[in-house]
Length: 214
Image (cartoon, rainbow, N blue to C red; front, side, top):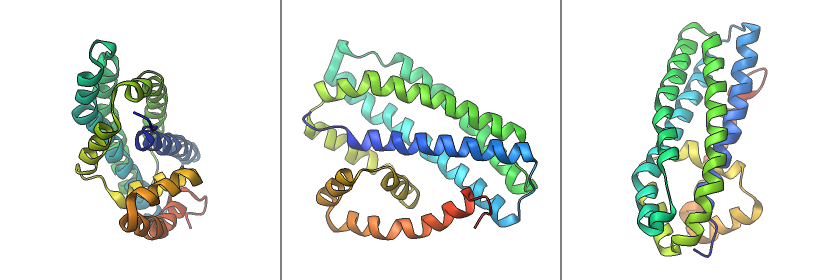
């Protein structure tokens, strides 16, 4: 393909950003034993839940949509065994984070186990994403045509990601050139999402990540 697989790379960029800041947040709150007010505890728990859903959506889309295309296009040049095995261990890790988020919502305190599970998830995905971008992205660029890649992205969009969560996070890690390209390719619907979705999301972020929760 002539272009970068920008959608994939942006998803990774947004994921890595949230892995780092959620790991830092849960570690800080667990260490301090801070009892949160109901609103902020629910906000953090909800964000963690949406983040876990986002990761699951991403890796299952790779398994179900991208990997078959890559195997068909690259043939013997690609071996996805290790990356597929990585995906298999992700869901139990996500389940543990969801369990910790539910405990946070109930007790208003970040459990030490949640902080540990977030650190484990962060470390796992940092390594996995680095491996994926080192091995898979060059194969996509070499063996997958632009038309085939467009079909991959269209299929993934149909799988029902939560756009009010995904779009603002993607926008936050996009370069000006990437934003301009998104507007050009997406037309009016994308322009509306770019304008509208970040408004409520920024308020949500402040509640989750700011020290005062405001």
